[in-house]
Length: 233
Image (tube, rainbow, N blue to C red; front, top):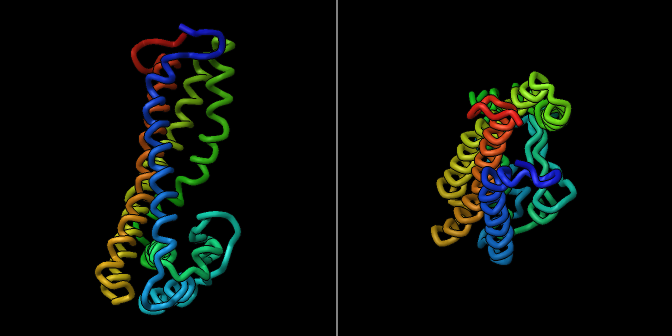
């Protein structure tokens, strides 16, 4: 039953997930804030570490650049460019080195044709369509009582949900590669690795929360469209 334009059932499905996402976001900011104040003993910047790990893994066609934004670090497989935010590109902290190494992990995945990264890349077009079009189709279909339209929206949103699920092994593997490089290459000392692990675990939690939220939202939409539980009001 709706209260105006608000469906309380939505909070039952998604409310706890939104709370989890908020907690994970706080954890990331808190961990990064703490370990961005702790300098690594080797004195290297995030950009230095990124280039060193790339070279060690015989990846020579990836550029390392600085980009704007806060924690906007990412690897672009289309241009083979690793972009680090200013605080991590020139930063010499444990947090900066950990995040830089994580992004290098994605570049190495690309160079090695890592299966999950390839699958995620193939899902991008449909995931974008699902994210942008599904809400419109579900909303209009529900308002106009066009069940098929609403169900099409649910189907498209499923691609966005699948994308968040496939993202998990990609991110976990990149962090695994980062920690192996930092520890195995003696870039960080044992006590410094504690901070790097905490930063990367906090970052990974946001992807877990995103996947859980997307799954819960998909189930809610499926229920409202009559695909789950026989309810399509």
